[in-house]
Image 1 (tube, one colour):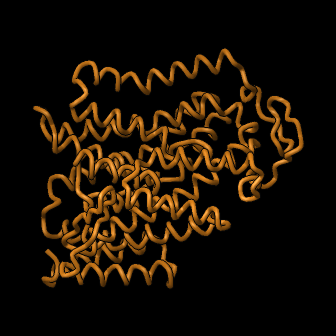
Image 2 (image 1 turned 30 degrees about the vertical axis):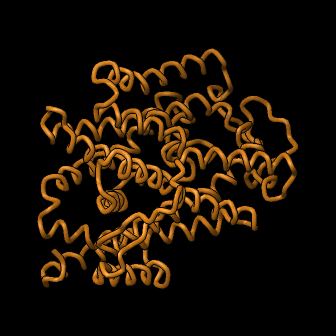
Image 3 (image 1 turned 180 degrees about the vertical axis):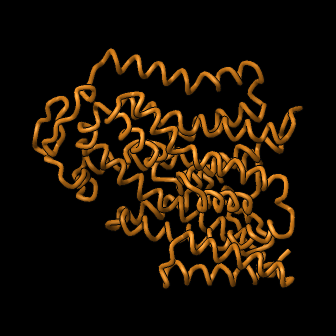
Length: 399
């Protein structure tokens, strides 16, 4: 949780590394994302070729309502865990206002939240000094290779500076070399260069889980690069929610569609596949860097209360960011027209109330009932809303 990027992927790499050294980490990490990579790629191709077909369009129409309810549920779930006290509540509120009203960039919000957490810890505010993990022996001095629980780690888990440096250089080159090569050969205005740079940057600034990543990706991919629309971002999230692998695999769909629509002289389908694979590479390669380099120092990192305080503040800010994501998605799912309302430096998205989509609103309400009251699993909610979308299409209410 102290590292940027998808923590589930990093945990898989760490488990493989702990059991079978670097090769184990590489194998575990790659196999962890492979099923999702294949599934999302296949669905992206189908979406690009047949997304406008009635039944397919109706399926994703239904999925959008379910996904919107799931995102709101994520806001509540993460908020209950992260918002302990008035300071954290305030951080979440300010974060929401910053990104929704002032369009502040996600990395800046994270940086400011981390500084607030560090300052709060230094000042002794209780909400920032209770970091750490259950079971930690905070007063103990650890020996290399020992854990806070008194367990012995294998020899390769002991910090070794020379080996760590070699590993860092190797993985860093593997991660950044494709990006540098693309910039040199295609320039900075090509879609592949944009994908490589943007998702590499995303990999080092996204804390707080996949929904925080989605907020940043939606902000940039939809509003800055124009790779896809708000509704299509929800379609991609629906794909990722219903396929194996980490939720962050939705980024592959974004990269696929961006390259598919801006092929630059290449066959669009081939460009889409290349864009999707490039996105996955630069998104997940940093995970190997953080773990293979930092794993020997894990126990010391776990006990660093200053970092834990920064993470607590970041997580609170992320709640506001995810709430912005939910509101932004909701406006574009439930209303046909959304326009920016500007007051000097302020800009707020406001829906045209007469363009409300009653069928989408009804599906959304039913999804909320399923998620919050009936406590249905997300797969069941998405299955129900997807089938409902198809049924409504056959009855003539959708598409």
